[in-house]
Image 1 (cartoon, one colour):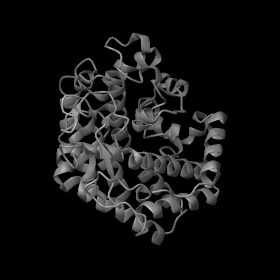
Image 2 (image 1 turned 60 degrees about the horizontal axis):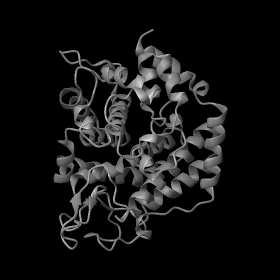
Image 3 (image 1 turned 135 degrees about the horizontal axis):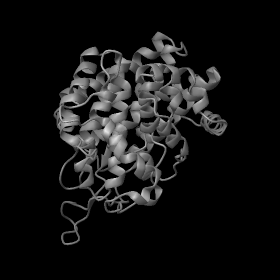
Length: 378
């Protein structure tokens, strides 16, 4: 059975992939979220931000005060997150992403409109209401005290909007929100997509040769799918084929730039997840990115073959352990479900089912942005 035919079959039987425990967890969370009000970034003024109350602000994770110059610019300590950095907007964005994706997945599971309507309240608060909305730019993300007011790499903070865009598409597809309700929300994504692809920060992030470049393409692919921007979808496919694969994957399936980090295991899995999202969004009957292979044999499939044994048994990881959070990995990343479907590989589907779907650590959730199978499979 070919990969595309297998995928069609899996779409018809996704209910067998989601266990009763998964369904109970989903509806329990969604019911909890029904009792919560939307909270956007305007609830958390950022005194160190160079922007205004509607501008998203975050600070570079691995930047710390200089012990030799306490009043001077911060210095970098890779892999070690400074707990005193401003986190409120990032936490609010993650909270938003989790709630919208959960509510819409619960709607897809049950057909109950109450979940869709409450998701729309969150969407309106973040993207439409003039009093609470977030500006569709990231001018002040990943700032560094004493150095810069924002950076292109801050764009990775909005990976939590990838599944939000997917949820909006599901609401539109199934008639759970009207065109007039969807229009202003989609327009926000159209504006953000324009900023991502034209501002210097966006261009800087696009050119990153590690997971940042991967997740830029994943975001553009997601938001362009929602807005129907076929030109950007085509250019994203081209970038995957001509830039991401040639510059990021070695013949053995490793990601060398991720292995240079102090958290090589986490970043290897994170980069694989981003590439899987790209392949899931952009593959079609005409262009199968899952099986696209460079002239020297390199492909995304090589990365899955390489990493799968070390996800099944982390003790086989041949490189240094991550300096932090190594004990909390792996998690139930959707890459394994996506790849199992694309390749018709039941072992990858089984691997996905064995992984822990519940994460408590904010640091793990920061790189765990794709959660709900019901938003990705019919």
